[in-house]
Image (tube, rainbow, N blue to C red):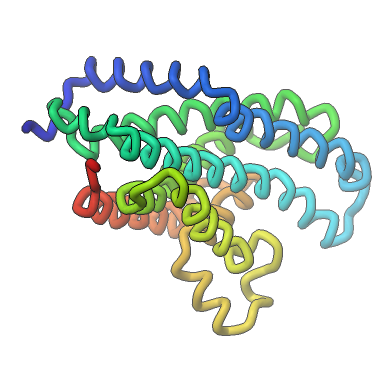
Length: 254
């Protein structure tokens, strides 16, 4: 079995997966509609007050809200990946794919492309829907922030690779994925500055990928150049490389 798939075949498989995903309303609602509605509601509720406030808390909230929604988008993409691969395995689809020239990496890459495409659509809709009620985001570099969200999602998806490669049934995939990802939130600096955390929690924050994703997203939202976050970018690259390598070795077809 060859480990490569022509670009044309990869494109066809990606397009097929997009059509399958769009036809499933619950996945589309969870990955696209809910994050957009969340940003819209939060922006409409807090936007006017945050736009006028100059206190450190208000400034932190102006950055925290969009970053929170961006992290939620990334986590939703990962959980969707985990669930889909588990469903494919349990339904015997992966077993049938094993007889084709597809490698585990090719299958994962296909789903990554699908998730990144949907993430880009979600971020665009988030801006279009929430800009009216969230004036703090009016001057944000849209393209740069979108790239930061895509890059962070791309890296965090690699964690889903490992979970999706190991979990045998669709029944346990979403709970295990949620446990692995949502347990990182208290340590990543999204709700509290990392410097304000106890030493033990600071040590944990340094080894979880969400910390670097939050740092990158927060900085880009506030107008920082990418050169100011090379450490975050490097850490997210390492996370993707290590997790992908592990997933390719432990991947189960059935």
